[in-house]
Image 1 (tube, each protein chain N blue to C red):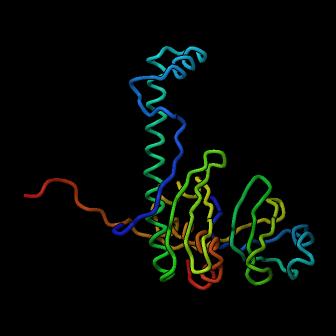
Image 2 (image 1 turned 60 degrees about the vertical axis):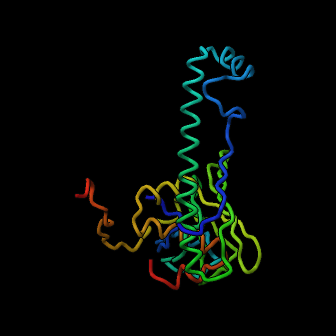
Image 3 (image 1 turned 180 degrees about the vertical axis):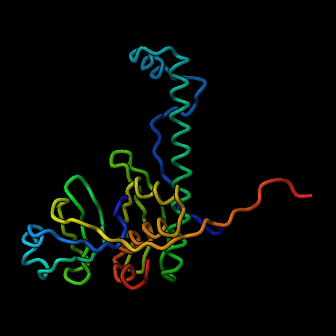
Length: 144
Length: 85
């Protein structure tokens, strides 16, 4: 979306992003896990690719949320989209006329909606954002 | 089907109506918005009866049916695949 400037935060499970050159810690981890360095390298690559897909999902989610906020009028702006791997959820940090607010969406809901991309599924994200911003009235005002 | 994020109309079982006594007026049906769901049941926001900052838990065994509005939806338009001359 033109003008998008929100951040997507997906904390990496690896402090060393280099897949080819394993750090000494990673080499010792591979040994402790009973993996060869090549097997560890492959697992790390798979993991980093999953993180990249997660980042793309966060970007996609943010673009959908920006459309929802645009309909709410001026004063609403998405600041960041952050993945939480402990709770398997996305946290949206949104600037509103009342100040910064957080809206948390489960990964399950987000995946359902963005995989299906039907109007009805995307409406679920819209409803949850409205609810999170204290605009429950909109959920019941408009037809799904 | 997941209910989170949807408006629903629930048909309460007798013990569900009993459990909600004093929270909402006694009625066979309850309309609300599902904020979340888990192994216990659904967390409902009830615009007619409770403030926007409150959600109440309705356990799975306290209602018999959940009704949702359904509208047929055509596929989204897709750009043609291939090369242009």
